[in-house]
Image (tube, protein in one colour):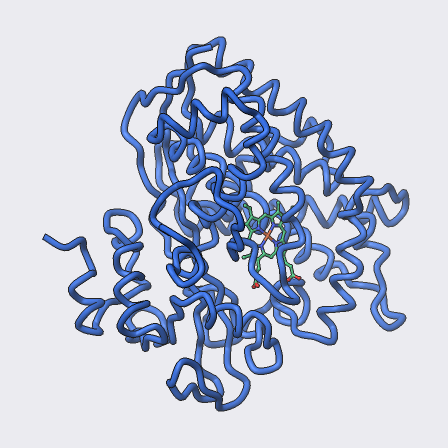
Length: 409
Ligand code: HEM
């Protein structure tokens, strides 16, 4: 029997915004069918407004590179577009078009200097050592909550200048506000919980930004709090929105790459053994983990003018959704795209996007994953499954919610 959605994809009726597809179905098989038959596919409006879905690499790159025709200012992921416009438009980096985007990016980029990345690498190694040490002495862990989710939060908190003492608290708040729920919690997160957590995060950064204005450091909050565009200081909302951009952009994405990467290595004996025997393979393995997991499933753009893509006429105002995860398995660009190959070179995945909005945290994410897999393969001989693996129910983030493992040192 074909996987869920494949027959519908062939018939041109599949709904790519259906969350069941991502939790229980086989989205790769659906995208493969669309890529062949309908690479610029008109997804019906069900729950979210109708949109054009792109599954070919070349079309994805064409949209990423043309910020004039395809705007980021009217919602950046499916479901976030309320029809009333994006409140972050023109204020949060990822939801801003040029020319303001270029100026804002210059400011945020000051927090990502090679010097800062060098310092953060030490923090990453310390944090990974601590998390893995604890998990190994316990004989195993729930890898998502105990390791994969903790690392990015600790690093982003450092980047933002959040004191160590507040980091655990911030971890629970961000998981509640932005995540698929706090993985440590058995209960589902309600809309009120999310709003409340979001409010607390906002209040916290408002207070931190006030302090940093008076007594600046080298952290991102200080940089933003003193940032100016065309002689005007960024207002407090802009500071907060851009802190939020980093929290959302760098947290769950890195978490899912780490957990999905471990799962791929666990289910592929040869890959794990090779990584253990030859640590020099870690950098290419990290690129393959990024391609294979593609945690940011899609990005959304809105056409600013009538245009054409893959023979389809797109009208001004229509939504265009670039499926990164589909483009990363396009056989026109990747040999044997359904094979997890830690030696794959070249590996021109678009996991971090392309063009003007190319992920600002890509170097940091690569450091986190490289150190994690170096330390894992150095300290652990074997990783064995220790319970059911649950996938995330989302068409925005692709990942694993629980990954219980036994760690054999
Ligand atoms: C942008 C993915 C890690 C901060 C993006 C974009 C993608 C992406 C696809 C482009 C969005 C668009 O074009 O609309 C990822 C993935 C990550 C990751 C898969 C981990 C594996 C991080 C980290 C940070 C970060 C660690 C920061 C600490 C950002 C920011 C932007 C961005 C600030 C906006 C850049 C701009 O609009 O100019 N990311 N990201 N990301 N990411 Fe990441």
